[in-house]
Amino acid sequence: MFTPDIFNFMKPKNELEKQGEWLETHPYVPDELWVKCPSCKNMLLTSDLEDNMKVCSKCGHHFRINARYRINITVDDGTFEEMDSELTSKNILDFPDYSQKLQKAKISSCENESVICGTAEIDRSRTVICVMDSSFMMGSMGTVTGEKITRAFEYATENSLPVIVFAVSGGARMQEGILSLMQMAKTSGAVKRHSDKGLLYITVLTDPTTGGVTASFAMEGDIILSEPKALIGFAGPRVIEQTIRQKLPKDFQTAEFVLEKGFIDAVVSRKDMKKTLSELLKLHEKEGNR
Amino acid sequence: MSAIDRVNAARANNRPTSIDYITKIFGDSFFELHGDRRFGDDKAIVSGIARLNGLPVTVIGIEKGRNLNERMERNFGMAHPEGYRKALRLMKQAEKFRRPVICFVDTSGAYCGIGAEERGQGQAIAENLMEMMTLKTPILSILIGEGGSGGALALAVADEVWMLENAVYSVISPEGCASILWKDAAKTAEASECLKMTSQDLFSLGVIERIIREPKDLDSKLFDGLKNLISQTVRKKLEQPVDTLLDNRYNRFRRLGQDFVTQDDAPTDTE
Image (cartoon, rainbow over all chains, first blue to last red; front, side, top):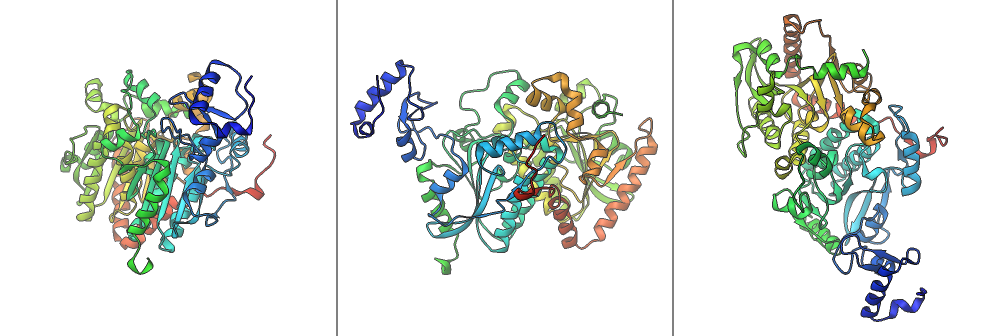
């Protein structure tokens, strides 16, 4: 029987791989020590995966990560100052079961909303940063999501700061009805005012970015980046298949597909993201500030 | 009338479409302009220039078609990205000549298909939202039938948004909502209540400025009244300084959805 012990981490790589195979044929996996890559099906050591920014070392698959983790690997240590963290939605329309769903989302994600906003430094360049979280109702855009993003843009406009948004979203939050739809217009207005002041806005699309978020601020960046293989689209693949009654081609709506069609600027891997953002920020700084 | 009755009325085959409104309100003065200058001409969007009691205006409508042939030709009023880009081209033109823009919205939603995704449906809608917010000329949007999500909003970032009494406007169709939330299409009627999508609901929520009462038959009485109302409204907006107009437009959307709570006041028991 395989027993997890600390020396496993120090064994040579091929040894570990063998164990991976062994584990695949045996049902017992010690809790949370190993993770199976959903893309290449290899077994990965959780600790290795953590060290590798949750990117599969075998095939480069980018695991979904939560917003706090994203902030940790993106900004300089100790520079993130959160804004409006206390804002949270209420059940404005008295939508059935919504209050309970909100409560559940708060508990499972440990966040108050589907986006975290604040200021931070990336290689000492100051920026406003908004990071969406897929573990909060699949990053759906409710009124508070829209409000927080709008406030972040207004703050950036007032203080002449760039904005970086990491998008991940299943779309508008239907439990908030028309008011969630209105957030698309509201955030777009704030983006436009920021843009008209000559300030930089970078969006990073991550898996998945769809619906009302794609059709508003996610696609409004001066520069639009994406993580590899992220699903990016307006309508979700299932909805399209139901509409056109045929199977979608492979790789349809991936970051690489959207890049080829001309709708994003570059696909950047997670390990290169901080460096890329840092360089882009510095390219847009006034000379005196450097 | 229940919400589902209004959904059905908004979708009724004999309901006037954008072309009916354009013909009845602008008559022969309407001159249709085609194409987005980038890809093609989307027939789901009818647009052009016209006179309104003498005043030159830009008119943009989403057209569902009035019979089966027309509906096929118009893709049932579901626009592709090139449709939204055509609309934006005409809005920019209207801005240049400082003509008010009048939009008639009637769509189940932006089209979901391979071509629409390949040509950037999300980007096209996003660009309209952004550009309309600072378009330096008055915009008035009237929802005459269905207002389906982002595909409707892409023509409804306006200084005022009006709705016909039996029009509906929603973030998702009640069918879609029922199937996602309850995996049960039979709950469509219930979903349409929950979504608060009728003109009265939206007026209460502060999303629209005006409800246009519908006479029994949507006849000339409606169109004449509407024509005068549009004319008065856009003339008044034209007199406003552009900065005021744009500030008001920004704040119109800015204030929507501020009914949140801070974590400390949040109710802890959720029944």
